[in-house]
Image 1: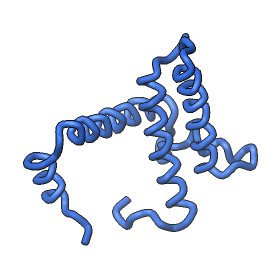
Image 2 (image 1 turned 90 degrees about the vertical axis):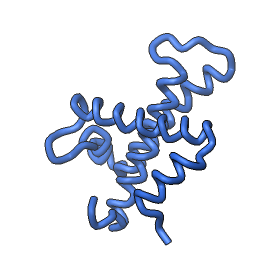
Image 3 (image 1 turned 90 degrees about the horizontal axis):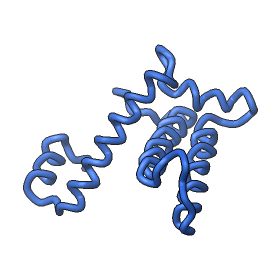
Image 4 (image 1 turned 30 degrees about the vertical axis):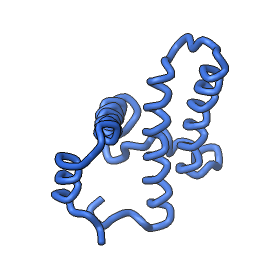
Length: 119
């Protein structure tokens, strides 16, 4: 059975561990980040136009999102090895990685005809 929005709110309000609450807050922050970046990268009618551009190179859009996510992983590998990141913090790269994973999932669902009826 799929939980309702109310079930999720009740879990969050009544039983969620503080670390889980932080996780949900990060998801909300990443949703806001995605909305903000859509203003620069998306197009009317296609919020993933920039990622979908990978098709111009024969790469499926969801794979294009994974390539971008891999760029973030490379940055994080450098940080994990003790290297300095000059242009973007590890926190920012982690948030971008989460967003790219979400974009990849949406584009995967689109390709496989699995998008929910309401979205």
